[in-house]
Amino acid sequence: SINYVLDPELLPGLFQSVEKHLEDQGIFIFDFTTPGFSERVEESLTDPNPRRVGSMRYHRKSRWDPDTRIHSNHFWVDVLHPETGNVTDSFEEIHQQKIHSVDEIEQAIATSGLKVEARYSDFDFSDVTETTDRITMVLRKCRNTR
Image (tube, rainbow, N blue to C red):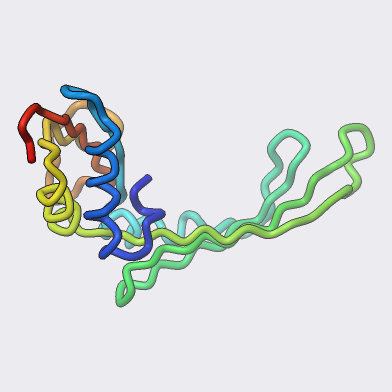
């Protein structure tokens, strides 16, 4: 996801690098979440109780900062012995994502020589609206784009 690019000033270089490495007519598909999504899901992504998935147990705390537009998810993970269920290892991960505006993304694309072929809402082929949580974009490298 493009949301892992924390500095918006790096976006133009990212799209320029993609353009450089694509063959003519090649496509690049990516997604990003919107500020509205982070506002709506912050609380629901925090787990009040640890969850077990297979031989792992995890607890997550989600935090959305609208001032910096950084959405953080802090995970505490226990690896469990498959037979006894005892903890054999533990670790933490912190995922930080920058929630870019659509304008930031489109301005960065405009510097790249890539053409926006499509914008899709969430996980289907519907049109992007003001309430779209996740946007999937399809970019194409066309001849003589630079």
